[in-house]
Image 1: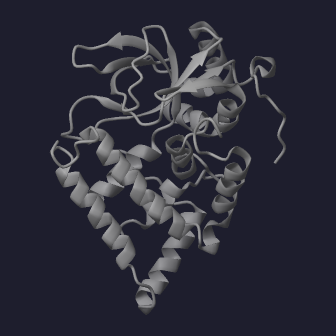
Image 2: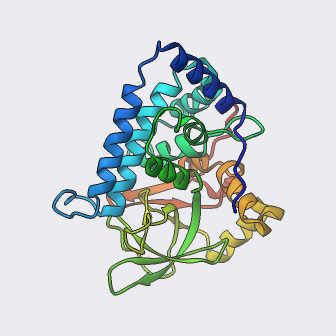
Length: 294
């Protein structure tokens, strides 16, 4: 049985705040409950093409979860207990102006995923996602919604090698760190070609919704460095963490500054994909490299 992770200090403070407010009956939790109910309803209908004709069911489900997390994030970051998280996310917004090319190579889907599930503070690496997990039951959020938030919290940006398409149109991506081969839906429409390297956040299919994972972000297609170059870089960046899956996840989420790499490595784009060049720890390989101090 998987050991339950103890809540960090921010989440613990939030739990106390909401317990006190709820007990005093001076807070209206209707907005939280209503939002989770909408997410639960979407979960019931994602398998119906007529209801979600514009999106693949897996994509539609994760969009619904991401949208609700955005609502919760806005509410939570207005509280003094989350000031450090709010400041971290706001500073990144100012630095990178995430909106997608041509204004910024950081897309909204990429940045919000980073802001909710990777942007972390304190020794316990607390995020918006871990805070929602801690207070979700107290707020009456649907268990299935919280389960999908946990899945997204366990995701990270990773480098993949394109290994071709299956007969059903999904693209097989190979994780350069774990070696796992994953058939993926790519909502942006970028099909790519075998041998391409992609930087992407890949989410697994929810139980009962097919067997293909989802490339949740617009693919960042990596050029100017070979697969061997990237494997060597990941060896340097992950070091000893590479032998442990949980430490690898933490390093990919927190030790590598993907925001800065995407910004500095931007080389162009089409509607379906964004092109990057160079390696994160080789400044001379990055066309827009600029030392930043925070």
